[in-house]
Length: 386
Ligand code: PMP
Ligand code: GLN
Image (cartoon, rainbow, N blue to C red; front, side):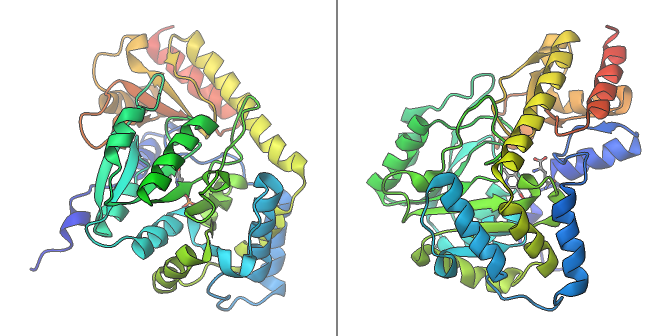
């Protein structure tokens, strides 16, 4: 048999799938893979239901249904003051994952360099390497996740095609500050590089911090590919509706990729997402407030049973230092043991690093009902004998 593609066949099964399967096998409370307990907003689901019966279910336009593209443009204006032409600067994708693939396959020429910051969301490196780029990795680490400016500067060169930034960042729960993003934007301008901004957690930011979009920074409007996801903004992760905002010169090659990757996304889910993006301000602040409450409740519980927690400024995730409860082993052991013995699943932070990862941090998802979080805490308390 001839071999399959050597880049992709070198990867195992993603940690999220592995931990969810283990959680199911052991009937564990699954705080590994990041997905909410709830079923998303009733009114958004109702639009999707109605659209299934009332509206066409055939191929929608390749760029997405006009009402969603218009809603994406308006959302950019409402939250970030960006003036976006929906007809040339928006594209609907099948989740942010497809948006990331379309963006990189559309922009990268083999041999280009891409700057990335570890910890890395799982699909970044496989996509970038499959596109033929050479990754240039810079790392941030728990517990402070501070940005090493000198390393970042050193990672950029004239070969840098783009930098991939994820803010708010999974799993670090770091929300990049305006100053940090200004620094990165400065490097992009200096080296004539683009920025792919994975901003799927844009509305999940806590404690009154602002989400700063790369696209809004001076000089970056023309060089940024901004990616959002209905999965995160409407707590409906299975929907896989994503959206890209990008200037026409970048959108054209990205859309060409998209036409051969998925071409379209289910029309009823697009219509419901359009409705959702137009919801009033209370929806968006309520989403963040609710998650912040869950973070506070879960974090207090973790600390009460002895876990040292790492700061969490946004996303679905909180990280703990497993040494704080006297665990004698690495994060992979910890997450497996916690799932099989305590009945609570988490994800090892080392899975988000390429080489020489930190090995004593675990990530929990707190986007859950109180009862789920309380049950997980109860099980861990019993397991730890506290
Ligand atoms: N980027 C990041 C940082 C994520 O955490 C996720 C979550 N699943 C995605 C992209 C993918 O989003 P989607 O489910 O819309 O493909
Ligand atoms: N983004 C989710 C997480 O980080 C997982 C998505 C997936 O399973 N691919 O947990």
